[in-house]
Length: 54
Image 1 (spheres, helix red, strand yellow):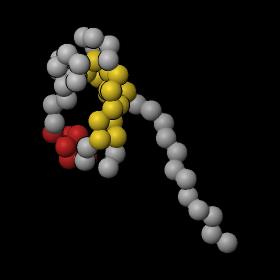
Image 2 (cartoon, helix red, strand yellow):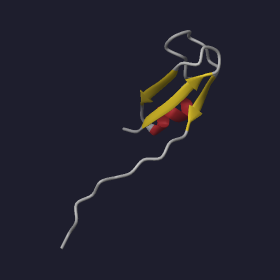
Image 3 (cartoon, rainbow, N blue to C red):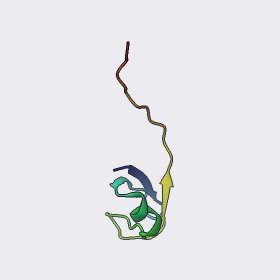
C-alpha cells in the first residue's frame, strides 16, 4: 500500500499514513497530535529497486 506524508498547518506536525488509494481519495485526514483537519499533503520523490535481468 502507498504511504502519504502530511504536515499539519495548525501545529506543524509531520506524519505519514499508509492507506489504499480509494481510502486516500475519500478519507478526511486528521492530525494525530491536535486532531485538526488543516493538513496538507507533502509530495516526495521515491525510487524503486529492481533486479537486473540478463
